Image (cartoon, rainbow, N blue to C red; front, side, top):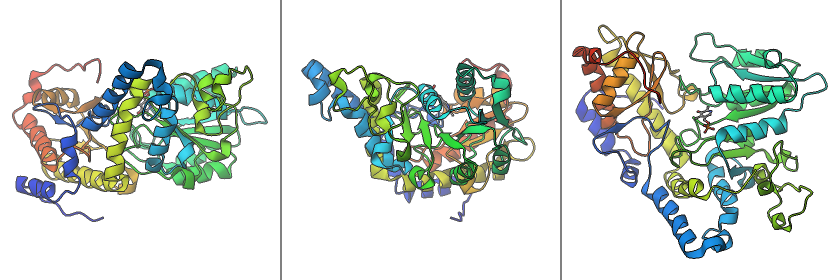
Amino acid sequence: MSLEFEISESFAKELDGSDTLARFRQRFYIPAGKIYMDGNSLGLLSKDAEASLLRVLDEFKQLGIDGWMEGSPPWYTLAEELGRKQASLVGARPDEVVVHSSNTVNLHNLVSTFFEPGSGRNKILIDELNFPSDKYAVDSQLSLHGLDPERHRVMVKSRDGMTLQEEDIVDAMDDDVALALLPSVLYRSGQLLDIEYLTGEAHKRGIIIGFDCCHSVGAVPHSFADWDVDFAFWCNYKYMNSGPGGTASLYVNRKHFGRVPGLCGWWGYNKDKQFNMDLDFEPAGTAGAWQIGTVHLFSTAPLEGSLDIFLEAGIQNIREKSLKQTEYLMYLIDGLLSGEPYNYSIGTPREQKRRGGHVALQHDTEAIRINAALKKRGVIPDFRFPNVIRLAPIALYTSYHEIWQVVMHLREIIELKEYERFPKTRGTVA
Ligand SMILES: *Cc1c(COP(=O)(O)O)cnc(C)c1O
């Protein structure tokens, strides 16, 4: 895809006019008077997600406990049902995905399943740019095995503080490493790693590999089954728009079915026999085995409506538009904001196959105050300390004209020195 853009406002409107996904915007609640650029942190509510949540609430009203079997679909197997529905978004076979719990809990369960120190391999490979929660979780998993995290954690370094080189990751895959855990898209820079390549290299070296896909699912297509990824997990409240704290998802490659999860619970039991209440655990023969306790119905239900939108729009179309929107945003930043006195720069890799759904806009001296000024002007960005403003045009609901307006705001904030009116400290939820 080679794209030609123009700077003018009328061109932005032309792009909207020929956008085949533009019709999905009306299915979302857009906060009044705002330009929402933070759908990579908390995706907006769709009418479809609202409807599926209200339906489950109503089923509860009408059916009480009978909703477990008589809900439509039955609550008892809703997590598996939504997993089947989501599988095509990530290139998984239908029984390899289940919707369960929170992302960090799923990480714990999967790492505790697949990290089996012994026979010389007793290290876990991670990277220094990953989301802190993942590092905390990995350290505690090592500690639970009686291993010192400082000695048993292999930390891949970044050369520039923003991105990772796949070759550096592969170089770190030595004979001591039992398991590698990496992000698909880096949460600050938006870099997309080459999952297929890294999986192949890990497997050549006898290493199990899993991916945290919080920042890619819903923006980028995946082919987990074809790439032979061992496991993956992601939250659904970012690009998947399932609502704050919405239930997360996990993927387990079929070749691992039958393994006993590290953290067992009755919800992972063979579903047909779960209520036999047998004291011997029999894991479900699907990714459903990695569930621990009862499905959180009200945090799960919105995902059903949300998935309908993704299946209707098509993840390939979403990716194509997302790339075009981020490219357009970077084109405007390069053209209007890169020189004096603006001094903005871009920390996201330029190649399409190396980026996810957001653009990391950098400003070395004033990012905090520019971010505050943007908010004051009705733009909802996302700040990452110390110098990154993340901007995520969301293919399902952000227009090209909004992207254009954001760039004009960024320009005026500098020209009018508007940022000087704001304090240099950041808020609690950045
Ligand atoms: C958002 C995010 C998380 C958050 O995990 P929760 O358990 O949902 O709080 C973890 N890892 C990455 C990479 C994320 O982007």
